[in-house]
Image (tube, rainbow, N blue to C red):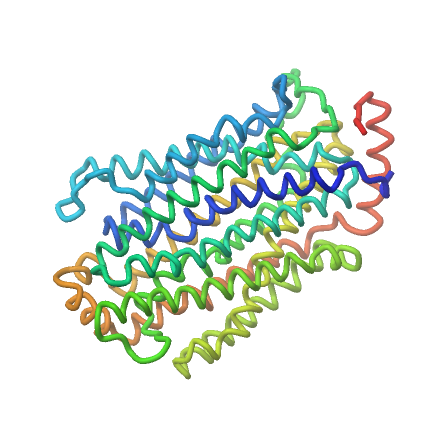
Length: 495
């Protein structure tokens, strides 16, 4: 059974293309929302911190709720497939609203601007949950073969990673349109174009998963908890391998900073490609170029790792791949900080930034495959498989990671006293002069956001994995015996 393939290449490709569509929209939001809130809308820093944290607290509630809904209900179109179709339009609309100010005054900010921003951000997260949890649960029901399932996840994550690469290049393309605008107008137009284009391209691709993917494993709907029976949440929290994977994912929040912090580093770290900018046009160009270098390194390192993962799966355990990549990323980030700061030459740092970005691809792929293995373990041990709830844990990890990364960026602004409201006052030239006058400490703090801060996070990520033991003979035993148990329970697997 382990060697039998269930999913044709066309179906794998369809699922991967849908992941690309989702990646275009999600990467646009996660990479640039902090810069938009802080440097375009110039919102109060504490408001942004509280918004991110409270929204994640709410996600801690609605992610598991979505998982339990999936586990308990099957629609006529399937247990997981229909949600992409139902949520595509709302996500597209909310993504555009997230980056397009419908007319609120940002100079004299009214309470209505803050209400609008909070409502759109929270609603976007809720609707995204309704689509994301089912979508990444699909490999669990596409095939019972764990190796095939791991390869499907790896391929989809790799193709989805192209979305990150596209959103990295997009500001450069849009930059030609806004090159001659003043700083404030250039940022407004840039983000509007990016949000609209990514939404209109990404969501139609995402919808394809509702039509071109087959749910082969027909798991029975989860029954209501019987008296004395552990709840589905308790089963999740007492599944040691799953808890360790989730904890590792939360600790790896710094990986998101390599892309999310790039625009902030480009503005305030004092790094330049070429000569120090002295005019508005040179300043706009330098922001785009520095951010591009950092984000391209992140995208190439992540994408390159994803390409090699299928070969690594054949020789190494998931646990080994994760630990080695995280420690390597930490070491590389230290070199980036030391060499970059002492030479003030960002281009020399490129090899080290590439290496420090490898864990982005590894964690994104391998942690999903590990969650699926943990759900197999839970089904083998308890007789229950809470696919939706287990996948919701991974969805929550990604969201909480993005939130922590965003909060860390804003906290750094506050620690070193960078007040964007004061910096962005006056003419474009006055803004440029004010930014050029930031202290060395302030510049160093911003550069640390793409170097040592994510590096320490990666090192912490590796710690729980040393205690993860669903490997080798134990893992094989679980999968072999689970196949027999499923036959005894009458669980059907379509060809």
